Length: 143
Image (cartoon, rainbow, N blue to C red; front, side):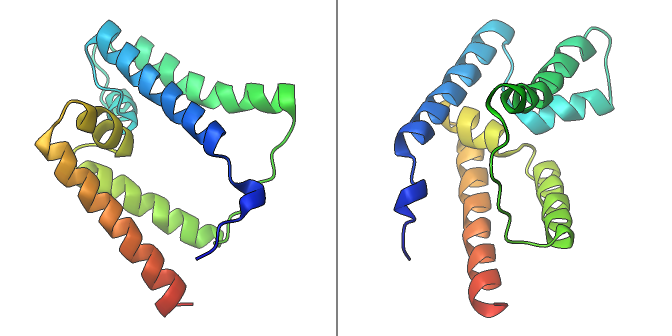
């Protein structure tokens, strides 16, 4: 394995991780809710009175932030080494996994682990392990 040193961004990655952690902490302190994207979006599919506004605002903010970045800073080169079919299948599998696992990577991996949740530890180890195995199989067995 080699590292592409020209695209290695530890400081930007650290800053992004700190911002995500702070957002999760503020969200739970202000709202008393876990910052799990699948739960927030899932709540829009079965709306309850008084619950739609903040969920919709959150999702719109997630869509608006990259649009604002694009408007201010221009486009960013994105390279995806997979076909659209593979991306679609992967997205569906992740969606199914979030339903079976009762949460997503942000809910379990960021918020759950920070609360020392045993269920989140098992979930995080499971999806990280499955990801490692999937990458190995796709890159080394399927070519």
